[in-house]
Length: 143
Image: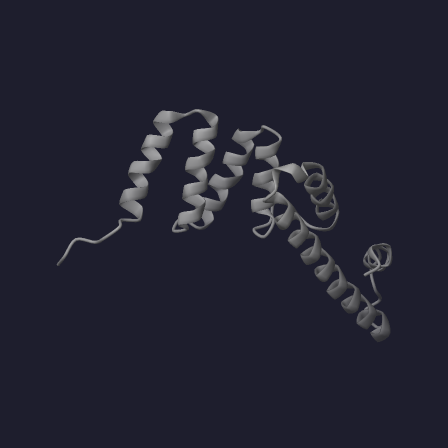
């Protein structure tokens, strides 16, 4: 995919009467979506390896050019980037916003516990652990 061609095509509005222009724009939007997904996949693969910090940062900046980093799809990458940069409170803030949108997601709550632990907030970690048992019990009481 030629990123420069996609950027040039999406940078101008198309006349609604121009059917060929509309078709071309839809094709370019499809290519943009494919490009964003490819870059997001690359970032996701690189985030698992701490030794690839520079490559992750470069891929993240490229994704930032093409996509809204505050979106639901990119939030895990934003959290990881902030964590790597030592901005744990910003990562926690982003994670809390995701938890607010998806309150029953166990992985997000576990990730919050890990961030709280990295921050050194042991009281909050204990509080979160107690609530994890209430939210996600290992077994339910019989009727």
